Image 1 (cartoon, rainbow, N blue to C red):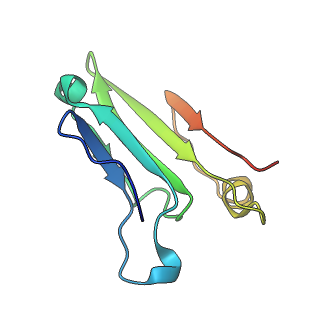
Image 2: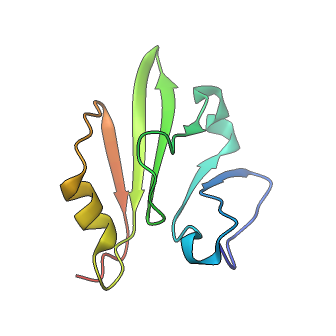
Image 3: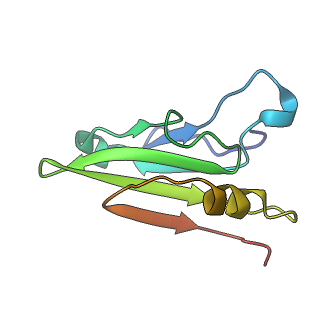
Length: 99
């Protein structure tokens, strides 16, 4: 990640990597007032530089946020199409699909 916003009122989730070619191209920001929902990043389910999957609890229910960025080769969309994952209570956040 290069040039991401950093503010004390926001928690940022992003994928980290030592390899420059695998650096994350997407981030998820959560206002600290929502931190009681206990957010956590889950690379164990989806591990792609253009996709972030974040879990949180809402009234004892597990919910998920997914942020997706699709580059000009559509690698994230192809990954999602070819990956079989069953995630319930999924909210998809998207921006700039380049389609």
